[in-house]
Length: 437
Picture 1: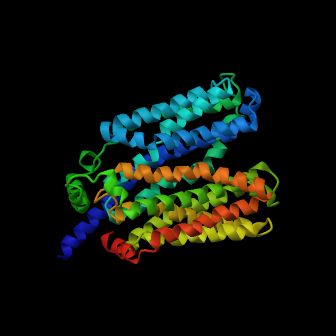
Picture 2: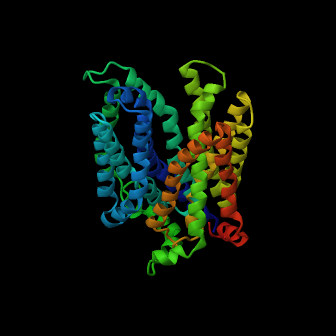
Picture 3: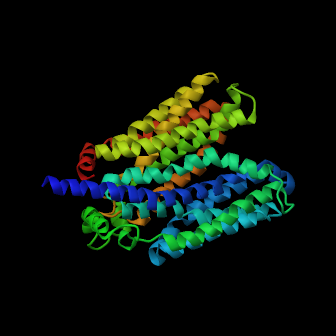
């Protein structure tokens, strides 16, 4: 009996390491590129606006086009993924990312800028829910949170490293004689074509097609996934059936609140760091701005492991989310200085910890059955995307109405404190999650 347990533990460790190396790491690389494609426009904004004659309002509208398309096309993306499979879907999506980058390198007017950003949002809309679904198809509940958080770590890292990369591309003498901002878009778009081809050859839909797993490891993984697969053998529930499950709306609204608060931190950070009077150089400002992003990365990496070890999800989302909101509320009420930066680092830790475990909740509560449908993941993700629209708009409205940026951030940060109430007031749900994961 002990020998069988030792063998099972050995296989579990091997499979966990291989999934981290051969699945999570490649997804993290694509996520890193995906995130840089979203934010590189902010580094090109000043020079691009001057060359094209864009007003601040026009530039803001162009940035918003991405989020509008991202929201509209998430559900169609996942339906396409279900119909054609991971390989052609990922290839087409990433090729469209590249086309948007090539177009951005050649835009000549505000209208072309709007359309190019809309194309990028349309192309990237399904990536996050698609990759979340793919990881859930490969990982048993015992290691799912750390796998999901491992892929998400790429997002804050892209914010830490993407700025210097874009700045370097904007500062070098490019061989094509283009404006620096155009060359930046072109240089970032070219690797996307290579990655699109590589991803189409590399990724597979199911573990039984993975060449990097041995037969014994595939058998073990199939047995570990069997309880979820068993629940999914019957007729798939319809959307109307799933819509009657309160957990769908708890997860959706909870993710909306978390992501709206997260965008509050992202939009507040650059302005705040400039007010801290801790160093006047752009390098110092960039370094200090990276600290909360580093906190997010640490929270993602650590809390996923803690949640898997404890076999619990809700408290590992709710407590960090509330802590992040309280830290941001406290920071909003202080005079600029080092204590504010420390509180923002704490807020980053909490945000990362909450986001890293959140996507383990739908499967833990059996939302949609034993295997969470990709459409459910897309719907919840759409609510989070709406936070990217609501957060900036609400911030602008509150700043314009009150004349205080701190009031706006305080209101948005309060959402992080409210979010855990939606996810944790059902005591039976907490007990069920602990037993089922």
